[in-house]
Image (cartoon, rainbow, N blue to C red; front, side, top):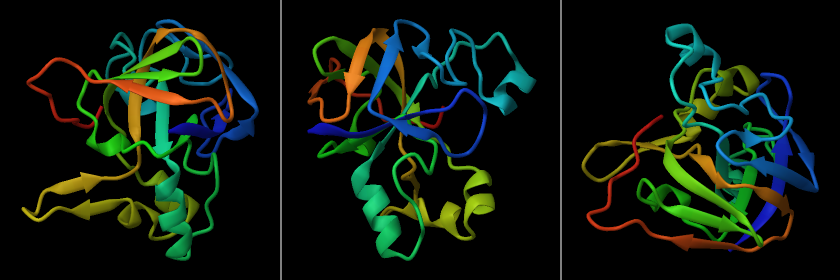
Length: 178
């Protein structure tokens, strides 16, 4: 399990610029990223209530999703769908809420929920929203566009850093959109 790409953007744009390392700030997010802060930064949520806690400080996506989208004909790569951390070998969507994700030597993230895909995906490329949504055997909606987390311990993360997980106490709480 490792980091295969890192991205950030100081403005609220759909895609983010890739970089070799990121500085994670405890309780805030990623230095220089538009979503950094202790209160919500997502534009629609700011409009609803700007005092909400920021549960979307860091966006993680599994590289396997990018490969799946590419195989389906979409032109996507690292940073395209707005993630900060692109992982390899981590089943992000199956993690329970409050799982701790340790990256590199110091950084600890706490999983808060699922990213809810929005129309911006289709604005980027027609059909992309539908491609990151699915239905399970019971007919329930499955959001595949990654997970959100907050920074519990800060530090610097580099491309290639290892990732380990610490599961929360049982009973596990399923991820919901945040």
